[in-house]
Amino acid sequence: MKIKRQKHAKKTISFYKYNFSFRQPFQILVDGTFCQMALKNKIQIKEQMPKYLMGEVLLCTTNCALKELETLGKDLYGAKIILQRFQVRNCSHFKNPVPASECLLSMLEDTNPQHYFVATQDHAVTAGLKKIPGVPLLYIVLNTIVLDKPSQASLDHVHAVQLLTPAQQQSIRSLKEEQGIRSKDGERRGKKRKRKQSNPNPLSCLKKKKKGLPTPPLKKAEPGEKRSRQKRLKAAGDNMAAPPAPNT
Image (cartoon, rainbow, N blue to C red; front, top):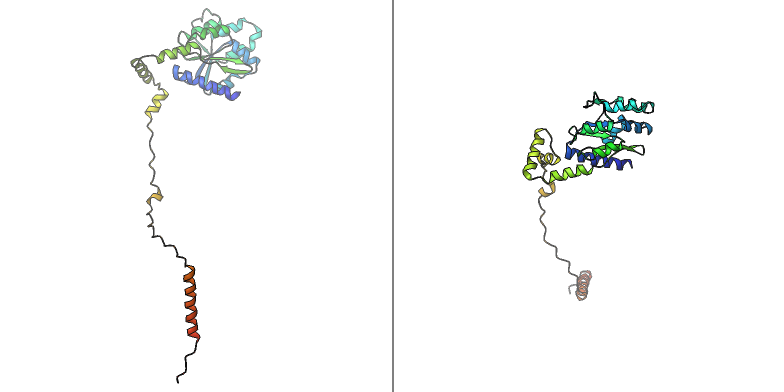
């Protein structure tokens, strides 16, 4: 199950990297509800979050989220201690704090320009951020951190960008190149693959052997020829064995 969650997270992170230019370290806005759930399930956020997202993370929160935990009393004291360890980002409600859900949504604006992840268990925050394209959502289920799949607003935004004219797409590419952002396709096109110089096959350099003439098959002697040859050899032997006749 852990491997399956890692594959799902890797696929979702790639979606946000390619379509919304997310880069490491990933900025994660955390509220008190997420810290309370992590404390209840004994989850070390600072240790497990980088492992799950497979990269460097920067955990942060807002002053409104801290003020909300202070007003809720001793029951959320542990969550407050955890949240105080994260960076506090400036929001527009410093003098007049608002509920944490409202504050987090205001930090995202209309297009999430700061590329925030949001870690929350608050249903009001979840419903609000799903209307904003390009906002990854993190929550805790069954003692594990889960990265939610891209929202319909994010998918619709990507689909609308793909329907742009070639001239509009080219202008977007040029803007990305000016900002130092390159797509995967651009990186692949820019890299030319060098062919390795291979040495000739040593077997192909050998001289071909001349084929000799085929030797004719031995001719088997016929039965009659074999007998006549034996008679001739026998007659020659008898002549050599007979003594010469005396002279009279």
